[in-house]
Length: 145
Image (cartoon, rainbow, N blue to C red; front, side, top):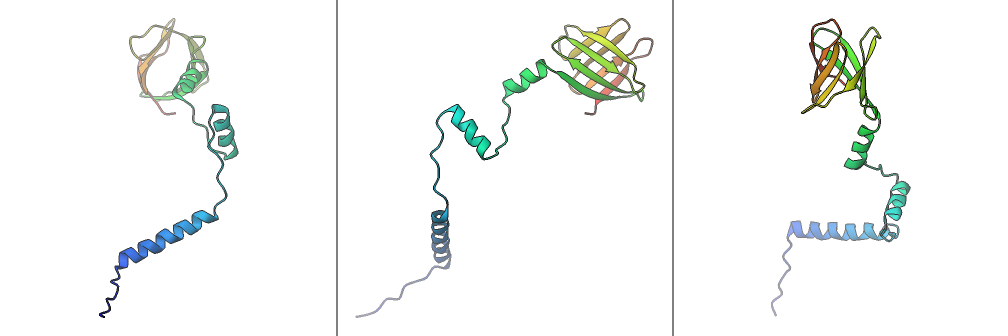
Protein backbone atom coordinates (compact mmCIF):
# COMPACT_ATOMS: atom_id res chain seq x y z
CA UNK A 1 0.00 0.00 0.00
CA UNK A 2 1.07 3.46 -0.80
CA UNK A 3 1.26 5.92 2.08
CA UNK A 4 -0.04 9.49 1.54
CA UNK A 5 1.54 12.19 3.64
CA UNK A 6 -0.58 14.99 5.03
CA UNK A 7 -0.27 18.36 3.41
CA UNK A 8 0.27 21.18 5.89
CA UNK A 9 -1.18 24.58 5.15
CA UNK A 10 0.66 27.07 7.37
CA UNK A 11 -2.11 29.65 7.78
CA UNK A 12 -4.68 27.00 8.74
CA UNK A 13 -2.49 25.43 11.40
CA UNK A 14 -1.92 28.90 12.94
CA UNK A 15 -5.64 29.56 12.82
CA UNK A 16 -6.34 26.27 14.56
CA UNK A 17 -3.84 27.14 17.29
CA UNK A 18 -5.38 30.58 17.72
CA UNK A 19 -8.86 29.08 17.97
CA UNK A 20 -7.66 26.59 20.59
CA UNK A 21 -6.04 29.39 22.61
CA UNK A 22 -9.24 31.46 22.47
CA UNK A 23 -11.29 28.53 23.71
CA UNK A 24 -8.82 27.88 26.53
CA UNK A 25 -8.82 31.51 27.65
CA UNK A 26 -12.59 31.75 27.55
CA UNK A 27 -12.80 28.69 29.76
CA UNK A 28 -10.74 30.48 32.44
CA UNK A 29 -13.16 33.37 32.65
CA UNK A 30 -15.50 33.77 35.59
CA UNK A 31 -19.01 32.47 35.09
CA UNK A 32 -21.14 35.15 33.46
CA UNK A 33 -24.20 36.58 35.16
CA UNK A 34 -27.56 36.45 33.53
CA UNK A 35 -28.36 39.54 31.48
CA UNK A 36 -30.64 42.04 33.26
CA UNK A 37 -34.18 42.23 31.96
CA UNK A 38 -35.62 45.41 33.48
CA UNK A 39 -34.50 49.04 33.70
CA UNK A 40 -33.66 48.95 37.38
CA UNK A 41 -31.45 45.88 36.96
CA UNK A 42 -29.69 47.47 33.98
CA UNK A 43 -28.93 50.63 35.98
CA UNK A 44 -27.70 48.57 38.93
CA UNK A 45 -25.41 46.55 36.68
CA UNK A 46 -24.07 49.74 35.10
CA UNK A 47 -23.31 51.16 38.56
CA UNK A 48 -21.64 47.91 39.56
CA UNK A 49 -19.35 47.99 36.56
CA UNK A 50 -18.77 51.75 36.99
CA UNK A 51 -19.95 52.35 33.47
CA UNK A 52 -20.60 56.05 32.77
CA UNK A 53 -24.26 56.88 32.29
CA UNK A 54 -24.93 58.90 29.16
CA UNK A 55 -27.78 61.39 29.26
CA UNK A 56 -30.56 61.07 26.76
CA UNK A 57 -31.48 63.90 24.41
CA UNK A 58 -34.59 64.65 26.47
CA UNK A 59 -32.49 64.90 29.66
CA UNK A 60 -30.03 67.27 27.98
CA UNK A 61 -32.86 69.42 26.65
CA UNK A 62 -34.55 69.53 30.06
CA UNK A 63 -31.26 70.60 31.65
CA UNK A 64 -30.76 73.38 29.10
CA UNK A 65 -34.33 74.64 29.45
CA UNK A 66 -34.47 74.56 33.25
CA UNK A 67 -31.05 75.79 34.29
CA UNK A 68 -28.82 78.79 33.90
CA UNK A 69 -26.34 78.31 31.06
CA UNK A 70 -23.19 80.45 30.83
CA UNK A 71 -21.47 81.37 27.59
CA UNK A 72 -18.32 83.46 27.07
CA UNK A 73 -17.97 85.64 24.00
CA UNK A 74 -15.02 87.48 22.46
CA UNK A 75 -16.16 90.51 20.47
CA UNK A 76 -14.62 92.25 17.46
CA UNK A 77 -14.19 95.48 19.45
CA UNK A 78 -11.97 93.64 21.96
CA UNK A 79 -14.63 93.20 24.65
CA UNK A 80 -15.02 89.90 26.39
CA UNK A 81 -18.52 89.31 27.73
CA UNK A 82 -20.07 86.51 29.74
CA UNK A 83 -23.76 85.77 29.35
CA UNK A 84 -25.84 83.83 31.86
CA UNK A 85 -28.93 82.54 30.07
CA UNK A 86 -31.62 82.02 32.73
CA UNK A 87 -34.06 79.96 30.68
CA UNK A 88 -36.77 79.45 33.35
CA UNK A 89 -37.02 83.24 33.87
CA UNK A 90 -36.57 84.00 30.13
CA UNK A 91 -33.71 86.41 30.90
CA UNK A 92 -30.03 86.82 30.20
CA UNK A 93 -27.45 88.70 32.25
CA UNK A 94 -24.55 90.14 30.23
CA UNK A 95 -21.33 91.07 32.08
CA UNK A 96 -18.45 92.89 30.45
CA UNK A 97 -14.78 92.54 31.40
CA UNK A 98 -15.09 95.46 33.88
CA UNK A 99 -17.80 93.61 35.83
CA UNK A 100 -20.68 95.82 34.71
CA UNK A 101 -23.87 93.81 34.23
CA UNK A 102 -27.16 94.33 32.48
CA UNK A 103 -30.27 92.14 32.62
CA UNK A 104 -32.04 91.50 29.33
CA UNK A 105 -35.47 90.00 28.70
CA UNK A 106 -36.00 87.31 26.11
CA UNK A 107 -37.86 88.30 22.96
CA UNK A 108 -39.45 85.99 20.41
CA UNK A 109 -36.88 85.36 17.68
CA UNK A 110 -37.64 83.71 14.36
CA UNK A 111 -34.33 81.85 14.65
CA UNK A 112 -31.60 81.94 17.28
CA UNK A 113 -31.59 84.16 20.37
CA UNK A 114 -32.84 87.68 21.05
CA UNK A 115 -32.62 89.44 24.41
CA UNK A 116 -33.09 93.15 25.00
CA UNK A 117 -33.58 95.89 27.57
CA UNK A 118 -33.63 99.65 27.18
CA UNK A 119 -30.63 100.48 25.00
CA UNK A 120 -28.97 97.04 25.11
CA UNK A 121 -29.54 94.02 22.90
CA UNK A 122 -28.06 90.58 22.31
CA UNK A 123 -29.03 88.74 19.11
CA UNK A 124 -27.44 85.68 17.66
CA UNK A 125 -27.50 82.25 16.15
CA UNK A 126 -25.16 79.34 16.76
CA UNK A 127 -21.87 80.55 18.21
CA UNK A 128 -22.12 84.14 16.89
CA UNK A 129 -23.97 87.08 18.41
CA UNK A 130 -24.30 90.83 17.98
CA UNK A 131 -23.97 92.77 21.23
CA UNK A 132 -25.25 96.32 21.48
CA UNK A 133 -24.48 97.99 24.81
CA UNK A 134 -26.33 101.12 25.85
CA UNK A 135 -24.70 104.09 24.11
CA UNK A 136 -22.18 102.02 22.12
CA UNK A 137 -22.01 100.81 18.53
CA UNK A 138 -23.01 97.16 17.89
CA UNK A 139 -20.19 94.62 17.78
CA UNK A 140 -20.02 91.06 16.47
CA UNK A 141 -19.06 88.41 19.02
CA UNK A 142 -18.12 84.73 18.89
CA UNK A 143 -18.63 82.20 21.66
CA UNK A 144 -15.32 80.92 23.01
CA UNK A 145 -16.59 78.59 25.72
